[in-house]
Length: 307
Ligand SMILES: [Zn+2]
Image 1 (cartoon, rainbow, N blue to C red):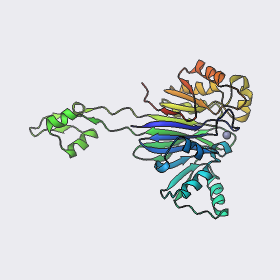
Image 2: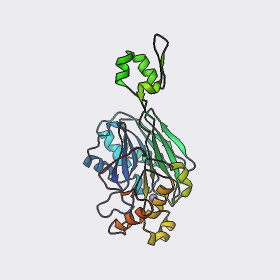
Image 3: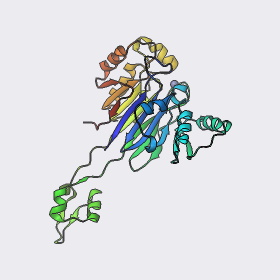
Image 4: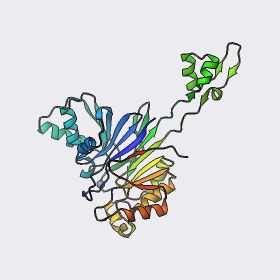
């Protein structure tokens, strides 16, 4: 079952070296979840041939322009394209007012219901809970109220053994019960245990998004063991003072988070435009946490269970 992350934009505030402002699309079992929506996100969606019919939820981390200025354009375009299915936007206090003011002053009427849910920059909170996924907000520390997001896939049911079905002639109702953990009782009273009828479900996977934030070891407990972590890495160690002042992280700090939380894979992005290439950022991160990749726009990353 699908669990993947497509990076649409992973630049910092100033566009540089062809990078665009932050936006990602998380695909979990075919459902699409957008994380941040920087300027130009709708063009990136078109370039990457992402079909938005399956998009139902948008998560905005904070109100710095490079994380949400594409939202109004995206909403307008979806309406012009005839969308009727509702969208729920999760974001900080103020986002609803900003969007609704733009809609009302331009006398724009959307063809689809647009809902807003305000996030809290305090604590870890459940934002969304469906049959496929639970999405949590994660408190980050930045210059304005900011949250990260954690996507935790729901554990799938056990896989039914085809041989067992034909051997015991198991009916649909029993298959349903066995998949949920039940045993099978034969007519002669013999009980065939669940484990003999199924192979275990794959491990549930998880993805955490942390941008923008200071180095925040308090969050290690919350992201412990996630399959994949995207963490901002705006600066290199030499510029740690600027990182602290602007409430961003260095790539080594991002890697410290990944190492302490024992995550499966780290992806770093949101690099400052001051660096002419990514090599130093990657090198400094890899010295701390080897399994680090530099985010590449247009690339889709598979979220794999921890080994
Ligand atoms: Zn920011």
